[in-house]
Amino acid sequence: MANITLSVPDALRARMLEHGEISWSGVVRSVIEGKLEDFKRAEALVKRSRITEADVASISAEVGAAAAKHARALLR
Image (cartoon, rainbow, N blue to C red; front, top):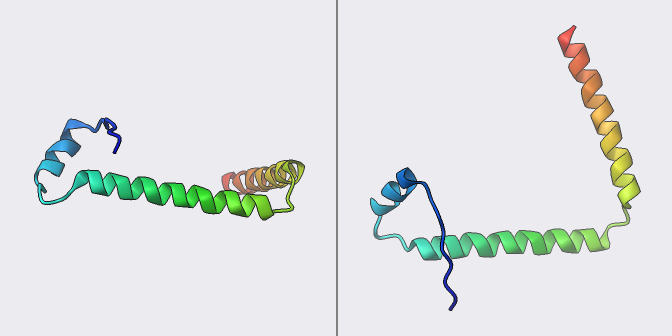
């Protein structure tokens, strides 16, 4: 099994040390595996999607314009 080094703030490390019964390597490994599964599902959705990059740009522009209009209305 490969090893990695992880940096955490001192305050977080101190809190982790209060719970020596927890396998922090196992926790981190589980989080990494979960995140990779999230990406796998997202990639599968993207592969099946018929939305093009141009569609995304268009939708993004519309959402941005609507958000700006809403913000202007709130500031009045």
